[in-house]
Image (cartoon, rainbow, N blue to C red; front, top):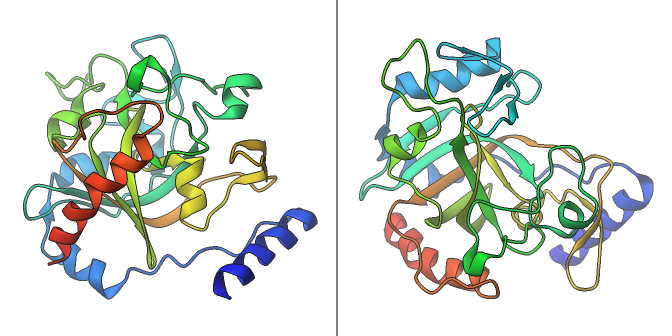
Length: 269
């Protein structure tokens, strides 16, 4: 009955052109207990995301700025990161609480009717094919940036997040929002100054559907009029060196869930 009520609310909201009720973002007691066992990864690094939220600046880099491949990386004030926590958990898992922007890469719309900035490609491409944002729950990590930060000699902004966390493309984990826990894979790379982003499929699984019309095959045919980030409360937990073997275009979601489930359960114990 609860699922039926939620479906009816989504249907009515879509017809009315207004967003559905916001999902619950309060941290569950189970998650609070898990996070309490963590230690700060690097507060100086975490505060750079706060700086970007306030000043559109990341260390010594003023935004917007062009990245290593010529793309423009925008500032953060219009869509703040809200990185409240960046922790290393027992066993090495990395956890952060943040906003959750929406990635549509690889989906029906981005591959057929892309908006400015949309790409059909994703950084992780099993079988040399992009992941599908419409069907695969994935998260995005900071991955692209200018080669250096003038205020921090020796830092490569494109690889800094990976070097500090040990996380790589293909690693798995979970995103927790309220009582919802969704297995995810690290499927794409984004700007060096942005943390907290996930695919359309992830947002749908979290009760934050950003699609206005789905096809019978589960592809997003039209973005919702209320399309935009979940403003905060999403907790992402990724397990470094956890990429499942044998990834192929048709099995990513299944292998992600199969690999992430026991890692998440072990963390809860």
